[in-house]
Length: 289
Image (tube, rainbow, N blue to C red; front, side, top):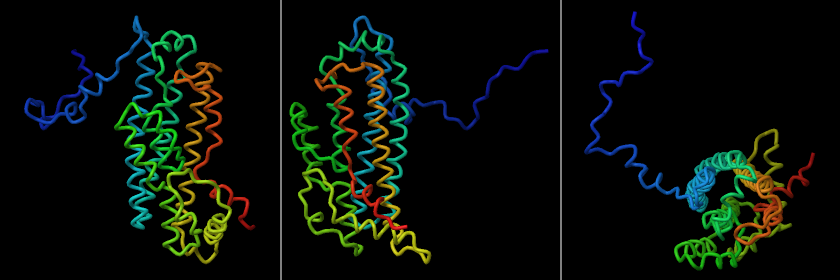
């Protein structure tokens, strides 16, 4: 008795003649995408492909994060908080993917990486224009960072435009002010090319929002409270990503300097001290029991 093959028949309606049609590969430009992995090691080291794909996929996700943060700010400026929170929720899921994928790169041992690291020359993640775009969009502005991108006019122009654009936090505070919350005028009119710094005067605004959310008869502005917690999630996720980056670098190169000239682990550790929304953390010590 013949044994049936472990196959699945192609259904009659499935399109098989694709000669003049849009295909999966052409829609996604897979010929271009899958040809973009060009190891530099000679002879080619097996693990360099992992290193390249890790960073290329990170850049693809960062492109989407920028896309979502751009629209979240547009929506906040239009006082469409619900839709803005949808964009932020998507960013949070992307952040989780970015953090989890450090575990793939962590399979690269120090010995394996050392065999092709020299071929990176001065290339470094420090030079990621999209990462800087995300930091700027979240409020960590640093005008001197533009110097790194002077050799790339397109990146330099994009970052300079982002430097002069209100951050996500700026747009949120402006939205709160239009909703009647007593956001200090100095913050609404501040120089947005500078990084946001802690404002003691802003904490009572958030204190009122948080305490209102705990009222037994219902909050007057629940969406504001929800947005505050979404921003805290966003920053927590960013810090988790930074920490996983730090730990992956530590286990791979130890205390060596970075390929781009940074101090390596020490430089990454100092990044953990940066914050986007300091008042949303400070308010937690003010909530009355």
